[in-house]
Length: 537
Image (cartoon, rainbow, N blue to C red; front, side, top):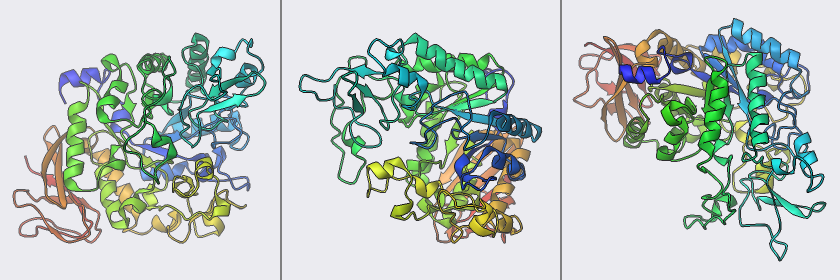
């Protein structure tokens, strides 16, 4: 990395978030300690050793704030508290202190776009048109015929406008009607939300993952969204329209810069942005002079065809698009997307793990990926997700990827002594206790990958060079100083020969625990095999 890029990364290189690995916890499904079937903060504290042994560096918690749970915590009713379902502020403080003692950073979810309709701000806003907080949310008069102000659609199905009988106006919600959008053009809203950041930063949290940031502003003229000519039956109804007027508006970047300035007041804190955008538009979220998010989430591995040429092309395009000093990041799964093992199969999930943890940039692991958890089958009577309830039958529900972690062979996988809020899939996932002692388990592979990444600067902060790709094999190298490592990935379920112009080397790690050598005349890759080898300089 050049001196210019090191400087642009913000002082000393590398920062903790550049060389580290982030692990996402979905608190409802991590560990329950009080028998109500829902994971809690004390459960996370009790399982920190799993994360330390795994080898991650930071933990991101999905929302834990007071909420009616219409969207499982993304409908916040109090930004500066803890929902009793998860515990208390004292429980949070104990978790934070325990995480820091264990050498782990703690990152919270920040939901700036909307609140719960039960938030005191919205209750006051809807009380009367003359309310001092009326302009804290987005209210509009009906059209002359009583229809909504425009054609905007909710991400979760149906119109994005709900009529309020008391005041005779509509309010806007990008998601559920129970999640009214805040009006970030109101300086009082901006101040109040920035103060939320200060509350948690002063408490000692190490950063935030900022939810749905590309929805923060809407078109000031409230113009209709154009029709999407690519929409087809079976797609999400919200995609009938191109969200030209309701996403990625220019004003969002100054709001992001304001959030970043607050974070910088507290030292080396991390701001991560959730924005599902094309790469060229995503780059703007790094901000002018890198004054935006340090890590605008890069979700493109999730949607790119799992084929060497496509993956190699994505990496090249992304690396070229980064602003000077911009640090890359990679994501393979989260609480909203189908699990890796279900998308790619068990064999390629091993290869995907090696890819994620050897690419240049900060990786994020979603809980359970280290166990090769798959999308669970959720019976109709077990459905919890409001998206699935609003738009049934399209496979949009997120419950299958949110089921609890199986920790042991006990009832409900040791997750709870009560009835779990979603079923624990103990049939298709080997529990943590058994995987800890199996050398060939997914958990053993993840631990080995993370140990190697931590010990090899070439893997954590080294340069990236594409070497070769065929129809089935992808080869790249990472280098730091005089240390060069080569990653060879067979992205197929068939044996493959190593490309003739690619060097072999001593094996540091293979996804195949029986592999001991890869040198000389042995140039054959096993099905679904990934290798990390040493290359002499």
